[in-house]
Image (cartoon, rainbow, N blue to C red; front, side, top):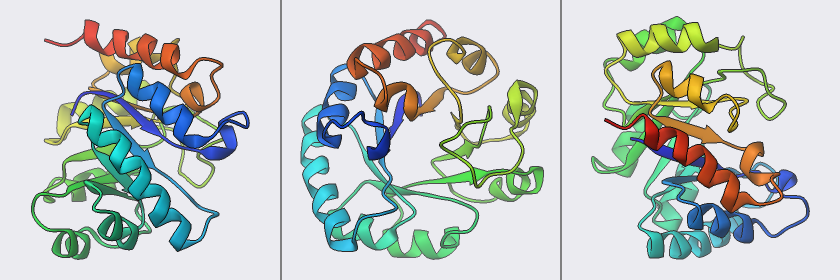
Length: 207
């Protein structure tokens, strides 16, 4: 996995419709979209996911659902992202099938070691830097922690937490081929341009 990985947060969209922000990110070159919803009903979440999936299909961008296996199944999403407190990987894989994208957050070194034996599409290194959008996580990994994981882990790395166009270069250089971004895109005055700037950083490091 490589590219800009948009993680949605409707509260950070400056009053704009979430679909509008996602569309601008797609126009800017986002490679993945993770739909994260904590405060809407299951029915609303499913309806939203189906609508966004259609939008993403036009750009050949996968839809990944945060946490909710039921929503992923109901909306025919491409996969899920799991935290350490969510459904165990083995059960999620059995329910979603062998082709589904499944990512897993790692917050401690034992998490990293355990992930080695799992057939994951990627691991989410969370968080890299302290950020108000991720308040339920352990201490930030920092760039040194990311480098350590990169040298050890067999899976592609998706870095998340406090990433923006100012620090993206250092995060990619530390070993993350994919950068998950929340507020730097959702709260940008120009989500398309914000996505383009981060994509340019990643593209410069592509071999």
